[in-house]
Length: 71
Image (cartoon, rainbow, N blue to C red):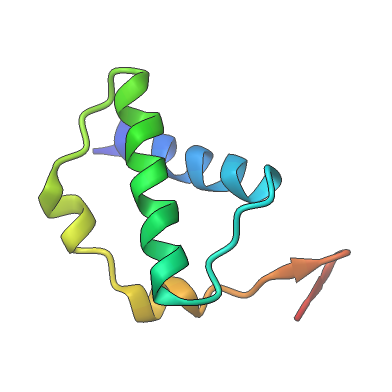
């Protein structure tokens, strides 16, 4: 649902602003788990299937922006 997707993006962005990063699968999974905790804390239900359907390869290919430039 759109509400969950927007919450997911907001939580992910906030974690990046707080210094979280996901250079490897282990840290990505930790970050995704933290996102789920954040969403559940505000009443948005995240089920296990949603987390299992995350494509780790595609997620980790997201470019990192540093001072307005992709690195």
